[in-house]
Length: 84
Image (cartoon, rainbow, N blue to C red; front, top):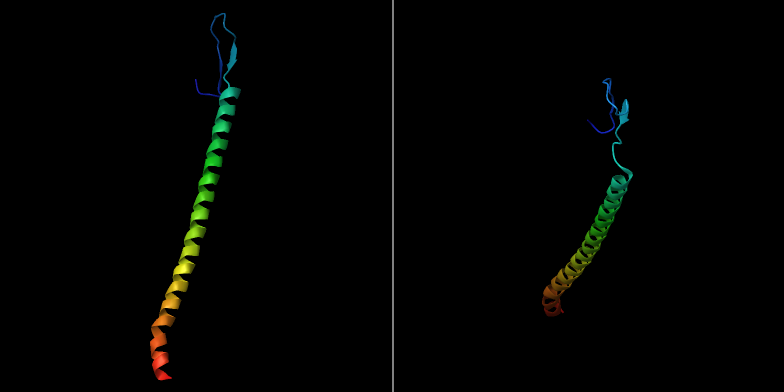
């Protein structure tokens, strides 16, 4: 029988006439909730790690851009010195 459905027994048995199945037992639901919370925590930690890595990469990119700019300035320096 599908979870959450009920059945009515019209036969002449000694079993109860009405039987209702619980869709999910309390213990099973609690363990699923705990598992879902753990997965959420794992996702948040992974996202935080990715954000930290992203920030570090952006900082490195800024350093490389500064170095490139300094190199370009140094490349122009000999031309400036010979002009004066």
